Length: 520
Image (cartoon, rainbow, N blue to C red; front, side):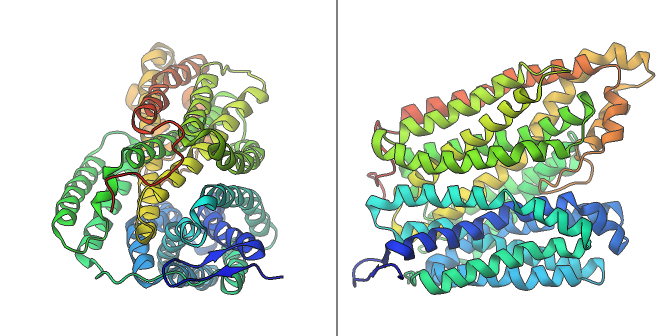
């Protein structure tokens, strides 16, 4: 039985029954692709490089170009959804994933592959920017919080097996098959979308092309600069970040003056919205940094394969799916503020576990850090999304969901850069004597660590460890590296603590995303 669809002239189309379930699945599948596909490519980039005889620099660019184009176009995707219909633009996103995924699999040379991946990033922007927005539009207000939590839970759950499937295909059949996982999942999502998801309203506002171009340049420059910053302070990173911030400021000024802005700045009048944005930036920042830090710990301190981190993250992701689903129901009972603070407290606990890691800590301690970070982020993201979407007018759902994604992309890129800079500085200070005894200078150690954590030449968060170089530097100074990890954990506890304070101050008790005053 197909679910019930209710349509009136004054409200969007509501879904219920089977249609509601399939809508959550269709949007969750699309969102999961954007998370899993870059992981598949990063895990198999060496095979892609060998297959097309790519240089190291070209391979790094191939691994990250989709992330860059996604960051540049995500707000535009939201604006297009608001104007032309979210379902329609989401459909284009899924079709783009299919077409350009197949093109990448068939690419005869680097140029075609780069074009296919760049176009894939644009398709991903439509999926990531509009999946949550569709949920916000087609579910009635009393059911939105639960629907959002189930959508995120489905996204986390579906994303878990995709990297493993892609890697198995690439290893046993060929690297080209790794590019086909996303198109297959997108086709399934497309079938569900066309059959069960109702048409979404279309806005009458003029498309703000200058504003979209400004924000695209600002996000592209900032995300690229943050990724370059992972290799240490350098002119390219600083110039790109500064340029991105200047253009971003120009975008804000322009949006405040234009009669039809791509991003209506009135949404920031809501204290709860601002708190949700800050919380989202916090958990994305910690997530990006924790991933590279834990991989580095496994490789350089424990002499393990970084693949082990993926094995630990799979059950953690399943726990995240359960956490996201539970967060929506909990918010309905106790309010969004309490649940959001709980998610941030879990992130804080994950950082505190870092301060207990040793050279020979049992794996369950490492898993605790991974799981606390993953579940905390999932719980916090569920409430972040609920507050952001439901404190803004429904007709701006696409733009608001895009803001969530854009902030998340920038913060996630910043995480590895800050973690690497602080961690490397503390390690060199603590282990200088031991390194000198091995004939390794500070500059040599810094350069080796830069390459080892993926900072050299990578953009958009495509981090590939060089295990040999990491082990060469840390050999004989494991205690100093562990000390650096402990210090980093203590320093960064300030991030969730500040976020908790912001949430407690700006979000009213028992507020779970009800529209607030100041937005019309």
